[in-house]
Figure (cartoon, rainbow, N blue to C red):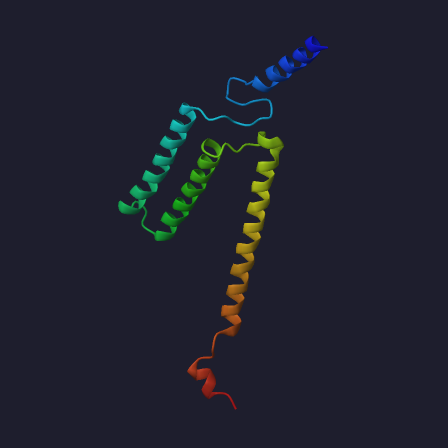
Amino acid sequence: MSAHTDHDHDSAQHAHDHHDEHGHDDSGASHSTLSGYVTGFILAVVLTAIPFWLVMGKVFETSSTTALVLMALAAVQIVVHMIYFLHMNTRSEGGWSFLALLFTLLIVGIALAGSLWVMYHMNANMMPMSVHDMKNMP
């Protein structure tokens, strides 16, 4: 009986210790490595330095172009942080963390769009009349 229990324990330990060459275990969870953190850090520094250079060097003539490029680089930096520092991917925790991220993005998008819609219509419909309009009232 003892030999049977030891064999089960060894096979369970072997399955628990099994990792692939990319630092993932069988559940898909990513394990941190020094090279992964260094890569993430270098990407984060570059993605911070480029917007700084774009603004300080006044590379684009219009501020709206600069703002759009900065937002795009910020989105890329968010993805870099999620992958290299938070270790989020579609395999970790059975995909639940990625699904939670998508749900959060959906809720934030709805909240932002709804807030902007309400504020736009409140501004258009609730602004006081001009002096000219008030004089023409009966």
